[in-house]
Image 1 (cartoon, rainbow, N blue to C red):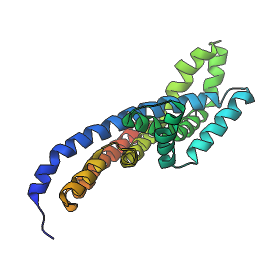
Image 2 (image 1 turned 90 degrees about the horizontal axis):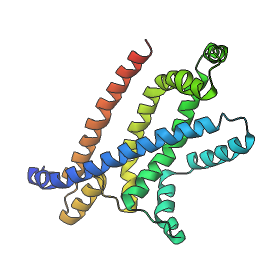
Image 3 (image 1 turned 180 degrees about the vertical axis):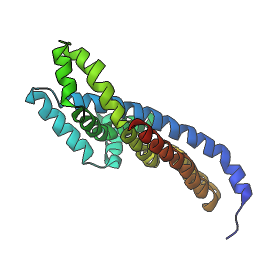
Length: 216
């Protein structure tokens, strides 16, 4: 097998386009998953079972169905109901929605890990419930779960190639398209594999350092 540096050079403009799309999907999907996961977690703590039960059913359904199925559903089924988004928007929403059901569990663990004395202190100070959550409970809970949330960012990064199934040309999609057009697979796919390593491995090291810092 001969390594063709010319193919690498020719592929790089496509790679940068795919990298930009990948990072966009990752960033926006992460924002949705973090925000919506917190909403799910707070709704699951409401006293009303008429709130908890539907939220529990929806999140369990999302968590226990494959992301690829959800991508196909949003991209191919919703237009039949006259609900249409771009392929990238659909992918971002699917990733964010799917991973929000996992971040929900992370938030729940963080909230339950706040010492009972913090709740008692807030009650003793006669803090309003909203103030208790925003000033006492959530800052402590989120500080505890930041490393775990970061792990899901890495998982989302590794799932972005699934967006290729709905025509989004992220990194792997660009590599596949280039390979099919030029009948050269080794160079573009190797570049993509190295790119994922160069992004995910330093991120995992950063998360470990952040975890050590936060647990002091």
